Length: 137
Image 1 (cartoon, rainbow, N blue to C red):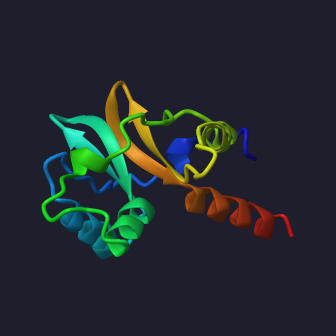
Image 2 (tube, rainbow, N blue to C red):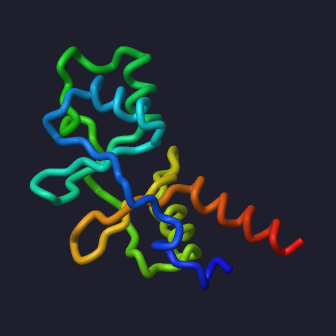
């Protein structure tokens, strides 16, 4: 199942994004409003980074950001991504292989021909596995 199912079958196609010049506090508000765990950072239709609810929320609570801190100052620029035709197994392996030792990668932008076309999260993958298991009895 993990080898046959494709990322494009599970990815979220309506991706909420932010810009490098957005203030961190407003990016965090967007994350909370849309109930998503990450925002790809877009500039001129290109993904240039990603910010997560975990990172932003943790640092906001600890008051680590100065008033007016911009997304480009805190975003992760080394973006791990997958393609729409990649298998779920490939996406899982990509999440695991690219996780920093103290962190996890739990969402991957889906890039097709250099363009952001979706995002897939660990929650999307878990949901697919649960659905597969329930139909198997």
